[in-house]
Length: 374
Image (cartoon, rainbow, N blue to C red):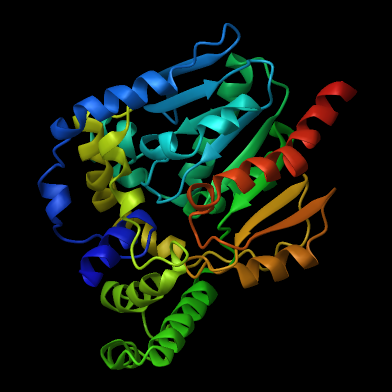
């Protein structure tokens, strides 16, 4: 069971090479038994406020159709562009779990990136296979931001990202700070190899503390990790499954079934889109992994816009300690570290109330202040 959970987690959080075959990639999840529950959630989630917005559509971004899902109770609110993780783990099918309260104060744009979710279901994978590179995602993010600004009559947006998405968003903010009020990083990636080391050390320490001899033996078989050896699929799975088993993905949980099965109840994804989630992971991950493992933002010491870091105290998927150190050294117009004491990597899902409170305290004023100054 632990290995099954680990593989699902790795698929969603950019940790293995492409798995040659996975059951869920071959056999699409059956959403039919959840139809009534989906309709209840759909009805609850309808935006009925006269000034609200609720729409989903494909926009031509980077030469292909990419899906945007836009929700908010008041069009006059600041707009957040949310760059999801993965790279093929869209937020859209699980936004019903946490986003509704945020929509009272922000209009939120969830973008299914190339190779992800509804975008993957829409586009012929062969036509974009050669485009799966970090810079292409960054260019797409900038193009999405420009499109959203124009469509929703915004001078600037709040840029918010999770996990893999923080790589794309950090690069986009550095390249085009004129597009954004501020940047909010959730589970920020600073240096991927350092993250791997910290995650491994945590898993090994926990296994020893719990007397888990099987885990200790398995982890020590790949030590030192990552060391100077290639970070292979097999080594990653061993290293990560135990860190996640001991709460490094979702705090105090051995698994994160609520997240991985959340799409089954999504009112925003039909059966084809749900099927495309894992297919998109399999398609994307092997193509992007070498670039991902080379990511290192430790040399970035100046940030051109206000920066806010949401950090899970128990995050050992993208460990928070390097992020805190990075932020302390950063020069920026303003910066804020926000610690989530009951969270690991899945902050918006684990502590949705504090997520909202933190956005209202530290982020919305940055957007409102600049709008009033115009």
